[in-house]
Amino acid sequence: MQLIDGKGIAEQIRVEITNATEQTVRAGDKPPHLAAVLVGHDGGSQVYVSNKIKMCQSIGFRSSLIRYDNDVAEQELLRRVHELNNDSDVDGFIVQLPLPKHINEQKIIEAIDYRKDVDGFHPINLGRLFAGLPCFVPATPAGIVELLKYYSIDICGKNCVILGRSNIVGKPLAVLLMQKGADATVTVCHSRTPNIAEVCRRADIIIAAIGQPEFLKAEMVREGAIVIDVGTTPLPDSTKKSGFRLCGDVDFQNVAPKCAYITPVPGGVGPMTIISLMKNTLAAAKKEIYRS
Ligand code: GUN
Image 1: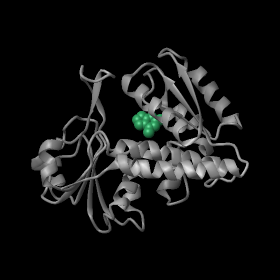
Image 2: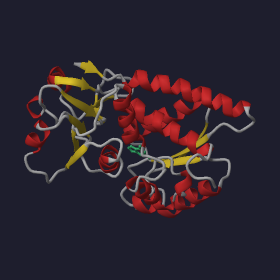
Image 3: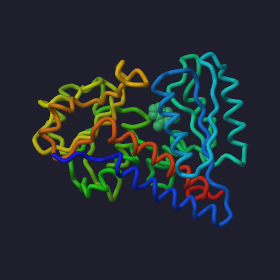
Image 4: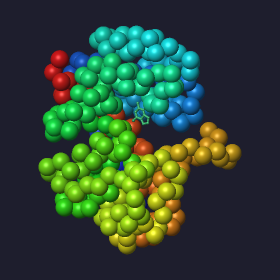
């Protein structure tokens, strides 16, 4: 069993991005600027956004954190999104999800200028991904593909089973893995899929992204499978400074001994997600995907 070192790979890419940023600045351009909108005080979201901001600082990007209370009006959020769309000083921005129930998340996502949508959640970016056109690719699926590449894991013709059909992970990942050049055979399982255990047992690669702590058990995994764990459910843990620990979707202790490769939580997919967002922000600043 080989542990996939997302943290280590993300660190290598972090150094590369830092150098690329330095070059940009030396050439006379402003450093990339990422803005993040955070609504409310959800523990997980606060930590994720704070990690994104810290990463910006560590690689020489500019960053802005825009915070709102949980009761912010949808109109105010829309106004702010339009302001960020029109702020030529901001290269890209994200609105951290989930949003409170009284806010129409899809409406907010669609209000974001797709050319600044470094999360890749706007229907134009998702549609272009679907069509195999240049676009901002959502950070978690992009990070997973990068991890597989780093370990030279060939997915051509492989049976890939994705657990979860979210717009953020499951659906875009399915598209990436089945694209020409990647060439995997993809199965997407969700809450209404019968016999998930049986489907998983036939998989060469399992990507668990359902947000249910330790959902994937040893008996659902064949010997020699590759397991990628996207889960990050915060569970109370008084021994941690933050008051919680992140729990993956995989029963790691029992699944790991059967695997050829497996990602840990934390230190697997998570760091790759943040670094992929930074890559998208650099691409936005350099106008690599959309010229104007
Ligand atoms: N919530 C969970 N993952 C993400 C992400 O990648 N981006 C945003 N904006 N919200 C999230």
